[in-house]
Length: 622
Image: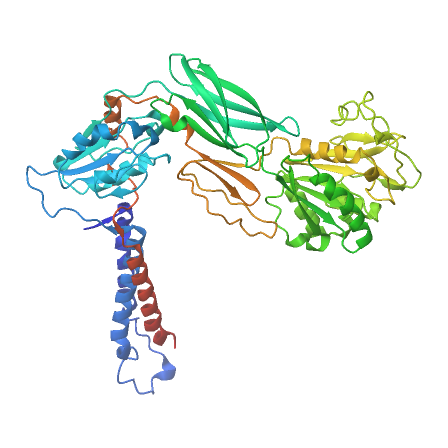
């Protein structure tokens, strides 16, 4: 039979009579008026419109069907197979099978009850799919769509008399899966709850793993766990890296979180796994996979002024190696891309963590600078370093709202870096107690710029003028140098302070930002783009735990944490929720269509009627 996903829309069907009414009104003869100038003309022997009367009737019929087809299409029709007749003793039976991970321990327990169900039963799994029989039911790690399964069963049952409806629910009634608002069953539906006799009340599992480097050869691995039970549990944790194994005994306190830390050598492949022994009733969260080589490298972009090849080569020679330098064996922290200023207009910056504008500000158009401003406001980081024309570049940044307003002068008197301001984040790196050549290189020319109240001065010249500004803009921030990283402006790249200065600024600006992708089983992989705007392609199966690479990104897939919590809804409360009809019965709810959809057939019919209407209407327009 044909049923509708949105039956309320069918109340608009009377609108199909509008073309009939318009046709009948158009047939009314206008009143005859005598006009003296035509009284000597012979009257026409036949009506002018009489020859097209059959076309008008057909056009009226097509337009009537057109309105009716549009209403039916909006009502979401679909075909649903229902039994032709029901005897007094026969009932329509629907069964919803909980496919959540916590049900893995009870699947066999329900087999005897499932075998007793009648042959005409319809099965829906809470992973959103209908199955032919209960043998196709397999609890999995994907977060279930419990509400959708109940909606589908409710809509199917609504096609039967109220005395012939039965719903069987097989579930452990875990709160994590059934806490949301549930659809009520059609009035009169008999609800039968099948729950385990003894649900697991104790669980201790992993909630996360954090990895950070502490030296060139060692990592600190912090394993976070949680005991949701009411009693302390003595467990053993096993860490596996590069075929090597580390074990620790752990006392998990009741209803508490804990952290266990290991210091291990840097692994070669980066694959890590932590296990908890012995396994409990929620076995799926007693293992966790993680990447053991820290975070994915931050994608950064270095933009140079390509018109001045000598300057671009000099800046690239010093800056790019400083960003990419890492101790032997350590994973890279930055994935550096190099771009000419002329090509910046075609770059997609949505997945770029930081942009280094190296001597290229005066080469960018107002449109490109406006795009950089938007990039910073949305959370990006921008480093601007003067080039061959420092003053022109600074004024371009000012016009775009990226630099403070106020006078700016080009100073050509030699100077150097003075004492680091006490509030600067660089004060700890270049303190007076730590010898550094930051204060011994020459600055040959620099900009003397005004500072706004929102700007923080991180470095000053010997005369107290700003050498490095930090300013917040929207969700992001800018770092503006007043002198360049090339021989004409300074000797900073030749010092040992250049690399730690640049890396410290970059590390602090990007602290807390992660490029790794951590997903729960079943979650869709988020979109990531290349600099060209193309999406990163990769086959990542998120239905099961695993470690993957997607371009520069590291992907971790683990079971959903909500499934680990052993809290349950009482069976009588669940029955009350399903029988509660305060919000109306299922016939009045806008439920998703089940069965074979008829939307495509209705859409094709609508298109055919539109074409016929256009053809029939052509003669009347001539």
